[in-house]
Length: 133
Image (cartoon, rainbow, N blue to C red; front, side, top):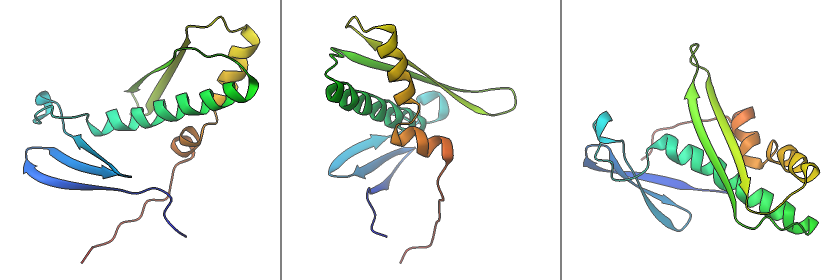
């Protein structure tokens, strides 16, 4: 099976700041100062939520365009927390500056429950590791 997406990370050796190469983009990741980092970039869980937020916005924009709906300025706000049992909970709040009907919102909420990244996060993925050369 051919890889559909790729990312690599390089440790710069400065606290927890690392360089990420994803697709043809260069990004930085770090931990906040409170956790020993420099705050030089988003933390890994920030990227995790950003992945879900971007898939949410792209999927709903595609769906709305297909239906001829004007989403105008669309925003998805996501937050993540762990409950007392350590279970991760992600909450997503959707906003549009357009007057969408209750039926349109209901359909968007149904669609957003099944975006590709939502499904991957919900269903999980097999992750394997090996030693490189």
